[in-house]
Image: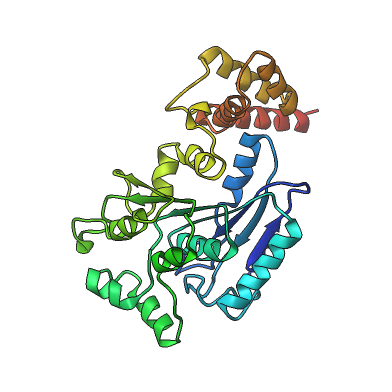
Length: 314
């Protein structure tokens, strides 16, 4: 259950399926939140098949190194609880996903759980205070010093990955623009990107137009769905219809809009497109793109208002 006392949200696919475990990012001025909840539901629609989801959040803002309140008082006990949840779902494969603090959690827990794929965005490679001071990166130094003072050890993810002894399926993303002038002319995350890049099985993607918050950059450029589908499920981005990279012409988009506005059955609409030889992911992504178009949303709202007005005068 999702409430402020529960920091785990489990979404069971109800059938044999992969599992994605997400880790919420740090929120300092509002309650901790789960991450990627709506986005993963959208990916499920685009794929046309269900998958399990487990969402975690760390209200202590301890980079998941002191467990998760309500699950375990320590990292070890929390990992045991999460492993139990994974076992109960019996997934076909396990993947972890997170950004910033959640990216660190995705890697740390992914390593411990033996995840088949780890996707992290803007993740630190280490929480060692000495390394942070040496690099002049004070962004989260106070958290690192607090954890060190409390005896939290083994916080260097690169060293932990090397100890694993087998190549990892790591998919990492970093921005290249600095977050603020006082942080200098080089993005401080790139040090961590370079450290990870030296690991076998690690693929690092750098985004010149983004700062630390790469997810916002990918949302603005309409590329987030394509990146996540590729990193998690190995779906070729070329199969997705996007406003910036359209695969269907205006006639098809008009047909989609008209049918959606008329309330046509979604499954029948997709089936009709497949019969015309359109790739399933292309069809579903085109429908999703039409449904978020401002003109479509305005038309939908006008129809709803008109219907309500007609009903009130009947």
